[in-house]
Image (cartoon, rainbow, N blue to C red; front, side, top):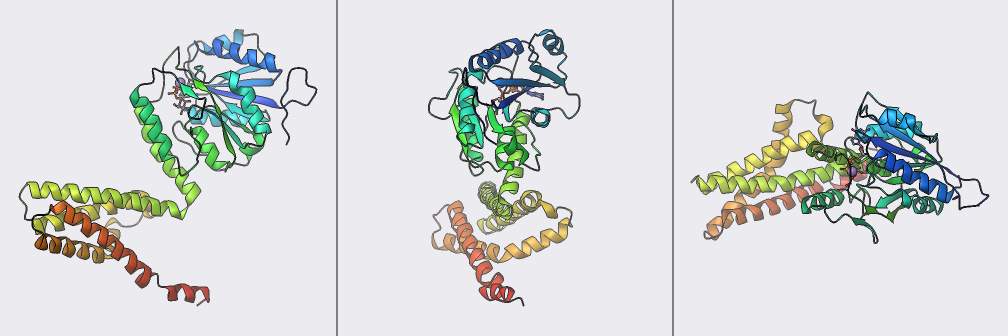
Length: 378
Ligand code: GDD
Ligand code: MN
């Protein structure tokens, strides 16, 4: 498909743009949004239609749109499966444009950036983000430190999925063909753009700088629960993109957290005067159990149906070699250097035991001869 921009007076076939706007209680913003889109539409001669996906706001939005003269604006009331991402997905399904754009209703996303975004698609981009974090992009000054930090951390966690600077953005454009190439859409929470980048396997993702304006009317619906959902959403995207490697990554994250649990438990036990050799053993056991519970819940969640006890015993069995080495080494270090902090000795024990576990697995469990046998078809 070729896309061409309608410059004023141009005779080329113009792509049709469908703008999808998810809304919940945005009656105050809608007239301003429509006015601004109408201006861009006229000025650039763009063939734009707008689909407002409203989650039954009952705030007069329906009446407002019914009374507006613009026949290219449609409002759809949704009553089932509410939520921002679900509303956008419904909109994408219903939209008929060659180019699909998603935009918030609250005027945070300037419609004036649309021609530049469309141009990037025409130049070969798979996905275009209206971005706050590329050169020229800005956010309003009154963003608190917390909101800024929150946004930055969330962005960093998405880094292995995409190198986009602003993957959290709710302002983006893609061609209908790219959208149709996607599969298994299953977003939870707010990050529908990230979902599309990953699930449509977009490679050429381009960012157009925007000024992200704070909303003037109504209020944000981004809650703490939404942020927790983001973690769950990220996990799904990692599994989709990395398959088995995502298990290893989760395993390593759990191991890292287990190390902290081990050190915290050791500190607490020593503080209540448990003898060090007992404290080291107990801390190892607590961390091992913690690792088991998290690996069962996350890294290997496909096996959650199995028996808890039998899995636990097998896990302890598999980790016991490393655990014994960890224990013996930690105590040996403390014997040799009694003035050292037990936490330091424990940390060295954990690191060496991890290395030994790895080497043992590499040369005893997954020996090269096994690989060769498999390759020979034995
Ligand atoms: N249909 C529907 N259903 N729309 C919703 C819902 C819902 O449950 N919740 C929110 N919306 C609509 C709002 O009416 C608005 O048009 C848009 O989705 C964004 O909601 P806001 O509440 O304004 O979100 P925000 O400003 O906190 O978050 C925006 O910026 C984030 C990056 O900082 C969004 O664009 C996010 O997608 C983006 O990640
Ligand atoms: Mn907003």
